[in-house]
Length: 139
Image 1 (spheres, rainbow, N blue to C red):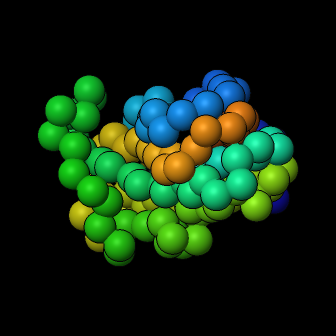
Image 2: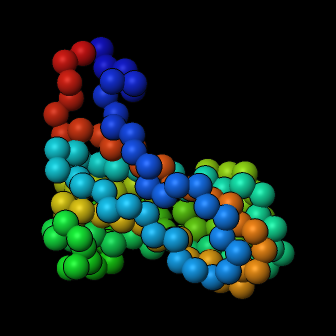
């Protein structure tokens, strides 16, 4: 029987940061070698601006530095970018968006970007990444 603790691979996508302008926040590049899926967790704190929006996009490619990055096709997404995006009212929530390296045009490397608009207040956020291996460890 498999359990989550020893099956999933956890990593930091973006260290906690407080964004006070419209600077895009880009996650670390995630290597999908040996993994069939990844889930990006966007964690927010108390968002101080009263009209800010935060658009989520995802890119993938086969170059380790993502110099060949293209927008992820919808078949490779698990969920939608629109559902992962959020507004100023999303205080202390977790938004999620997944990526499948085995569906659609799956690539080896992937990253997530959160781009604020109309943000002049403090917007604390972080990104965590959880990956599911292609081959499950003995259970």
